[in-house]
Length: 408
Image (cartoon, rainbow, N blue to C red; front, top):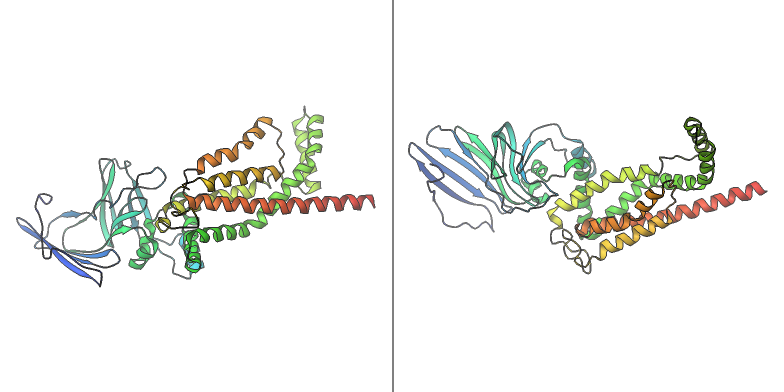
């Protein structure tokens, strides 16, 4: 009945350019009359005061998403937030920004994953969300129901009497959501590596406040990440040089003890120990970069702040792919050059051949990735080349000094 009964409005148009504006929507449902007093604000938020002439059970939705950005990389569905202990991502972010850590836990219901009605009590946030946009309610101790409508998740707030809520319809802009309530920034979802991605975005946003260009902010962020990881990268690259230097001796041991795996392992470990080499040392920097890469991938993929943001020259939108493929091709070339100067200790020819194709594979992948992400990885590869070149030269000088010392 409620869906078939029209509302009457107290005003036919509202102007919020110079401040708030209100409208009252009235609906008569036989025994019960409903008045929705909506007060809209310039930042896209609004206050809803819902009043009933008598007690009755009802459900109200924040509405359908304003724009469905269809892709397979970001979350589309309903995000429900509850008060909870501040997570590690908020604690890290508050350390860098000086703000208070936000206490909020979220539950995500992706489109197509809701088989039956899900009821959640004690909710603070009920949002229908896609990659860049959201429509939501925010209040205290709300009762939410998440349902499925043609594989699209929808959320409703249920009540038996009068209800007051804050609502928002618009972009998932971090500054706007934070100005309404800092907890609302939790609907910007970064996936598995949220604990790294959330503080990373806040730091990137802080850099942008000083630099004024999102592209150059990404470049500076990449350089800072490289500096932080430099001690580990240095050890890893040095270890790879040592392993390459020991490769002939390792091959001798493999030939000598090819029928005795236990002795081979023992002698190889002894060889590593005597020469200060770590067979896993070269893998550690790469393993550490994986969560950082995926975190910044989600940041640059989800941040609407990059939509329409220019960097320089031909890059006019960092959220879209490079229109001329210059960045991904440059990234692939730099990755190839990095491989050329990086010491390797491959014993399997097939594995060595596969590794040679990695620059081409990465180039193909990055062709369709956002320009902001490709820019990050291009600068990262450039830094790796410089770092590897310096370490190779330093190792060569150290080796020559050892040879000269033995001769003397």
